[in-house]
Image (cartoon, rainbow, N blue to C red; front, side):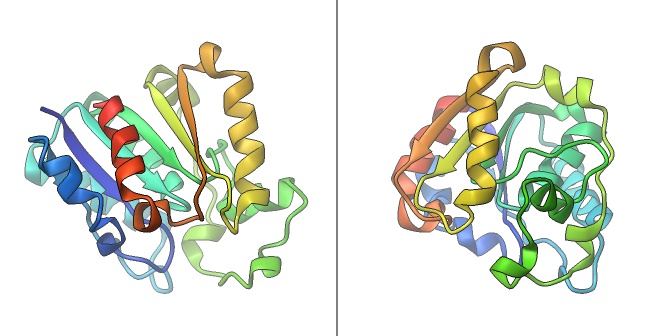
Length: 198
């Protein structure tokens, strides 16, 4: 049986995974869906540290670590800090972090202004993430692209890059015909993908 840690994106909490958690648990897996600190008053480091503490406190190893949307930065930071505990990374309709780039920096590299989405200027999204890319490269990874997501313009270029380099970089990839919050609208389909990575 596998351990799953499911990380939410910005201005959400762990309850966004409520439809997926029982679908994994009924297969005998242990599942944690923590709520991260308030993005308005926290920094990215606090998000990463909160999940790292969870792994230590719960004694979790060889986990499937999934991050939705901006949760991609959190799970990458966790995997960089504790690679020995992470068996698989799952990026759900998100960017794929780039060393030294913030979330909004990656938007801007694509020619997209966060203002187009009326996104808040919270510290975690403005803070560059530094990590050892080689550590992350060695961990098996999956990308889930939501084809009807409101952040399609951001997610699709990352999905296409993953597809092009999947074999070289150790990726699986899936497309779901869903909006951005696929864990709410398509929990069974997402759970099926997650189970395949365990």
